[in-house]
Image (cartoon, rainbow, N blue to C red):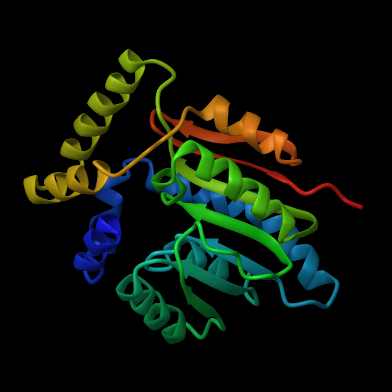
Length: 233
């Protein structure tokens, strides 16, 4: 896949530009961690090792933040770019976080789990809408009852005008944060492969997939954190 090659090429420097290219970085990732943490802490309290499936994990940024917030978690990281996962492995190993990595794209069967939390950051928008809906159904199946799915994602505007406004705001914000022309050009090239969907559509797909408690927990223009839980049985 062309998109995998693009991420392979920047694996070693990808994290350096995250705070400049994701203007709401702290709130965006911080909210994802806050939403994912409760079932992980419940697993710890019950004497189990909390299990996390990180989809499109890239360099392991979200898994690292979860491991810092809930020491004792064991993440399984899935990504189609081996070089990105190699960076993640190095970072998790240096921090003493037990983990597993799986080289696979998001259309492949998911590792069986079950998982207390399934998380993803800036990855699922590479699937078309049918692929997103199928993935949401499969995610619910690998969650423990009461487990949570959190998607920290780039979403589309509900209209072309709103989508254009999202892009204007993103460009103004990343320039204010000091993003270089090369960083912006690289981001634009990767974004050519994006297939973001509007937030209301994706929340509806989660409900249709059987999730409960579906909500948007954070949104700043094109960046949104949303998800839901598998119902207790």
